[in-house]
Image (cartoon, rainbow, N blue to C red; front, side, top):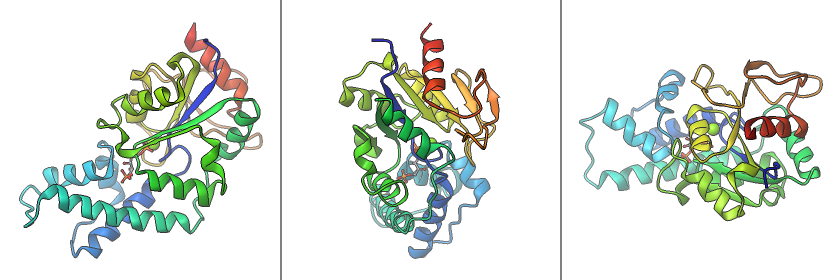
Length: 255
Ligand code: XBP
Ligand code: MG
């Protein structure tokens, strides 16, 4: 079946601008642990080349603090820091006040009404997804998604295609009937390498990344009264992303 049946959605930077909340949560967990580490937005922008919070801390140590030493296994130490960061992040997000990006709430409603299946394919830790959806989208919104594929369910994180393969396997769908929405180059490569047509909406930390191969690159999904800006690709006469545009993109990329 080549028709579009399923939307695969990234979380951080796509559903909401959450990366800076992650950054601040990392910094607070470092302070809590008595460390003088501080990730500025500039440094964090670089560290985002590595997906996964634990992997990012390890990359930071290797690149910036190679002599850092602890009297326990480094993996355990990093896992402890990351658990503290996750607790801070989920508490922050659970307080609500993290708006969905423009167009997200509307497009999800339109897609559900049109009978499209929804799923999530994210690198972030599952509890972060639950907190974001439950407290910022709708109390029952986790149930809008047939599959929530997140975090460590796969060994290789984005840009590896594993999380998309995992989601599609759980959905029992073929890549040709899916379309992904992502915000980062790592996310695009992950979906693309899994054979999935991908729409990119750039975010706070991903503007300027290389989105070669994306079906369309926009500054946001947009709203009827607040049009998107096309960064690359052809959006035809559309000024905001709706199910029609998604189906057009999917059909175009399936030719
Ligand atoms: C982006 C990521 C995540 C977050 C931090 O995820 O790379 O690692 O930065 O979350 P997405 P964790 O695929 O949704 O864009 O600390 O839980 O890993
Ligand atoms: Mg993302």
